[in-house]
Image (cartoon, rainbow, N blue to C red; front, side, top):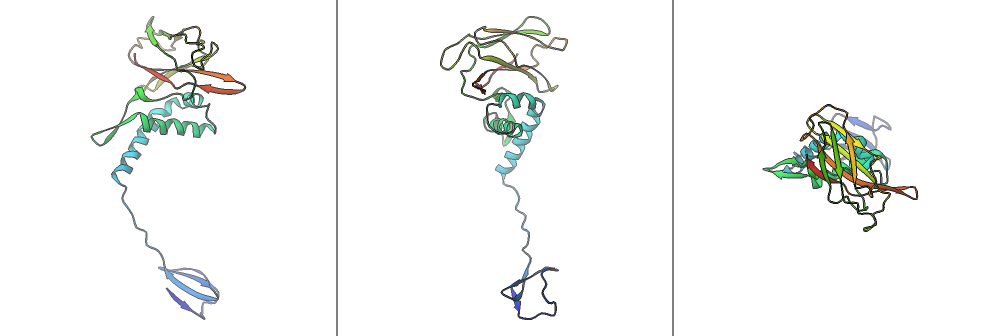
Length: 214
């Protein structure tokens, strides 16, 4: 760095070529601009970026459902979806030969402390009609009869999804689902189920469970 008590430039500051001109304690000072050093990303950073991109692409089609399933969390919808993505990166992505692979069954469509659905089964009653059953475990833990079922079917290939928000009650133990497409649909969708309730103006969810690709 160089300094000068007087300068024909007067009271100036700014950039001059590779020099930065500024004043300090009444003196004109010169210093060189810092060089930009490009550091290549580490293998871990590259892996994390790929994992994030895969998960973001997969979950983009069910953003609305994730906003609902994570609505028990504080914050705006974008933060709730961000939580769903980060959770999937952490729990649903596995390292296979150095490449991230997403296990769809491990994705969560809701999170919370409510009692989860237990002994869930899905049976196709027709080409576009299915029946979801579960054990009506009301009053076990913090479960109650009035807890509602939140169901989501998602086909990551065609990006089709179908959800039921005002589903059956926990006490009913079953829900009939009528899909809007002609069949056969069996074996094309992953099925997710969870319970939610609204207590004292606050919505609460259970963690979702995935029944698999049925």
